[in-house]
Length: 102
Image (cartoon, rainbow, N blue to C red; front, top):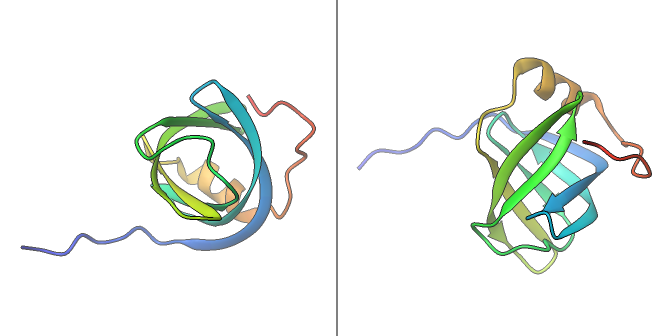
C-alpha cells in the first residue's frame, strides 16, 4: 500500500460564489486552494459526492464535495486548474460577490 502525494496547497482568505448542483448559490470563504481542489469555510448546500461549480477567469470550474464538516467543506475538481487559474486564485484576497461569476 502506497501513499498518495497531496497537491501543494496555498492558504487563502477570499470569498466567492459557488453553485451547489444548480439548486443553490452560496458565498463561501476559501481557506486553501490547490490545482486539484480547495477547502472552504461555510456550510455546503450539497452532500459529499454532489456537484459544485464556480467561475474563474471567465471559465466554469466543476467539482464535487468530498468532505463536509460542521462549518467547512472540501471540493475536488473534475479537472485540475490550469497554472493560470491557480495563480489567479492564489493572488485573490476578495472576489466581488455581487457579480455573477460564470
